Length: 525
Image (cartoon, helix red, strand yellow):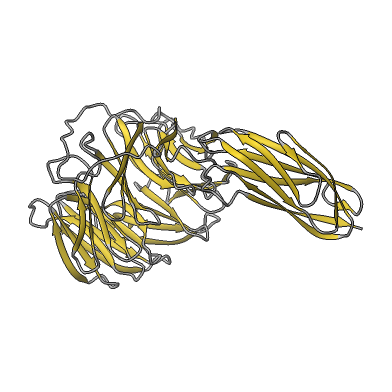
């Protein structure tokens, strides 16, 4: 089996003291599908990766890829044949080329499993397993929590590992080929690993929590594995979080150190020294830094009330705004999973109603945006897509966004390849719509080289001119639909000759990168 719904119903109390609640009609669930996963990652094309696992003897980690429209493209697994063990996925990450990394923990036993070893796998965009690393040995008691990937394809895995001081929080880095780059073992006593994220300065930020007692700890690493600072022993009844600004300063969020109600926001300089502390009555445990170096944090309105509350402080420790009822009077969200800021500094919180996954948006000025729920009982994480949507994973996988947008794309290929001067070359142009709305009034243009004769153009729908530059009106294309145009030409000179197809539509299409395609023909004498 994969993810079971939460078995119990908890009393969700009404949230207090917020701004007016509204859900714009343009925001909703674009698609939802099974399976869910422990996390979600988005490619530059808007495709979605999730990772789930089977809790059964010889259970496997299952990696899934979906198209931008939610269609399941493939599922892959590494076939574990040891009936005494099962492999549990913990995190998923992708890069600009569409590779996917999945971290996991190999567990021994079934009724009361113990952590045996850590595993990291990398798959190609078409689902081929490129490499698999089990570290450090087959039964060292280690485990994983999260994987991050940088622009060079280096991966960084947070988990527990056996270091000089015993089993401690550890970050292990691999290169693009799966070779170990470095290991870092915690010596400051930050506790068991909770979370790892990128700082705006390119650093790795790790949050930990004591196994016994109520203490939070944090550390900051360079991408080369060098410790920048560590800060441990923060007395807090709630788990905490850390974020870093572009200039290397950091924010920590914890509960009040004396155990009283509310939270403490602490700002550190680039060396980890405290600059100031500020208090707020909400029970906060997520923090992010916006583009200008200000802190946004979220949590419950107070320690006894469910819901989604947010506040923003400037770089000097003064509160700019608060929104203590961001999810509205009809929701009392629990199980807060992740908070992210988008490019415009709007804040998003992935959470749960206990029966559905939920996503809440608060605008950059603190005003209430919207709350959308989707089937899936609980949320595990989220990721932004290039068209302004948000992928949400947990009990199921869903995309939240504007259902009135299209995602029209164009692809260009040619045969034969190479071609000779005067020989007929056939361009095959494919137009597709992976969005939720019909792409209306589609127009296609094909810019051909000067020394090229246009012989014919045959569309599967609509009509084309027979003059250069080639122009076609293709009408409308429903969500999930496709059309094609076959163009025959003759190149009259040799060399590398470029032709470019450009697509436009009257329907909003936030993903512009796939609206143009270029083909280079190799023309021989």
